[in-house]
Image (cartoon, rainbow, N blue to C red; front, side, top):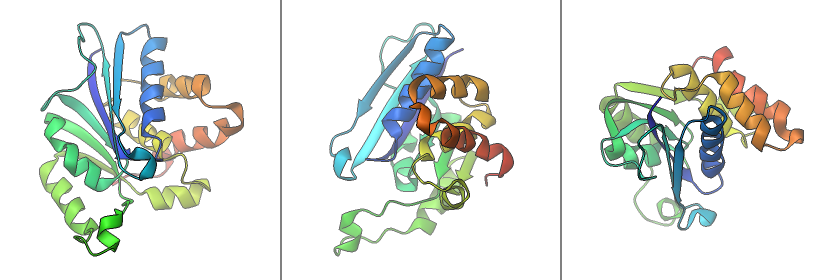
Length: 195
């Protein structure tokens, strides 16, 4: 198996943990894996970008332009910003919940979610949109967006891991008191269709 995976979002959404879960799933299968994160001002709601490269012959942890098999986007505008990394025919799994930047509420350009989603639908042929707000209501927490997106992405086949392989990684990494919630988030996409 060989996969180049990009995860993008904003600080506090669990992007780095999701990349760690993917790396753990790869290591459990004895697959070579390299990861890298760019977090910058992530602690203040800034952009977070994680690269996960799985398989033989991976020399660098960074996914080059036009090389990503899949982008997991925790925020729509971050998905649009990172599309240059997606290979032709690659998949995007994106949350439809925006994280409006401070500049948009303090007089800067407005955040137009409809325009961003329209752009993604026009630019990506293999797009899965996850209704993050509906999932948060159903699950009782918005804090498992990362595992929710991993579940949705796993079901597209784009990640190259099964749900059980991702679940095993979750059980290796996540504290026991959060496992039931994370299991429900991982299974959510099979019960609730994504758009």
